[in-house]
Amino acid sequence: MRCIADTAPHLTAEPFPVPEYTIRGFRSRDIPAIAEIVAEALNEHYDPSLYPSLSQQWPEGFLVLADATDRPAGFLLGVSQVAGEARVLMFAVDRRHRSHGVGSRLMDAFLERSRLRGLHRVTLEVRVSNATAIRFYTRYQFSVVDLLRGYYSDGENGYQMAREVA
Ligand SMILES: CC(C)(COP(=O)(O)OP(=O)(O)OC[C@H]1O[C@@H](n2cnc3c(N)ncnc32)[C@H](O)[C@@H]1OP(=O)(O)O)[C@@H](O)C(=O)NCCC(=O)NCCS
Image (tube, helix red, strand yellow):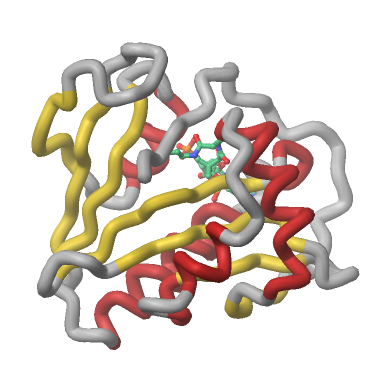
């Protein structure tokens, strides 16, 4: 599974009422909204059964930030397949909800869940062209640990980034 990053330019926040958000675990009824976010933000179309199947191994690692109507505004799907490590497999926020702190709340919660699980490191992959996400991750003290040549299906290189969990 690759974390396919959006290469679209970062949108500046437009006047937008800041809604109330609730952070919670993934539910199967979230699949249509998450699939929409994935299609727009990551340009990927996965079989709907992928989401519940990926959530099974570590349900607490699949976080959803829902708006006031309980619709997902963003999500972070993390897995823990290597001993002691978490990996961010998919992370995206609905375009209309970006730059309102949704991504930060998801990342804060994910790092806390990782810490509570006793994991010591978090890794992720990002397109080298995805300056917005790289800036976000750098703000979260992730640093580049590897260049993944031709990592993405269109041939673009990726960075593997990682940080320790305090
Ligand atoms: C990367 C991504 C998940 C970040 O989500 P987000 O909800 O926009 O994240 P935040 O709002 O928490 O932070 C974004 C920026 O807005 C700023 N911000 C957050 N709340 C703010 C507020 N109330 N007022 C002003 N700025 C704010 C943050 O400081 C941050 O600054 P940065 O650009 O230096 O990182 C989002 O851009 C996205 O979905 N991108 C497309 C998919 C993608 O690339 N995913 C990663 C694949 S590896």
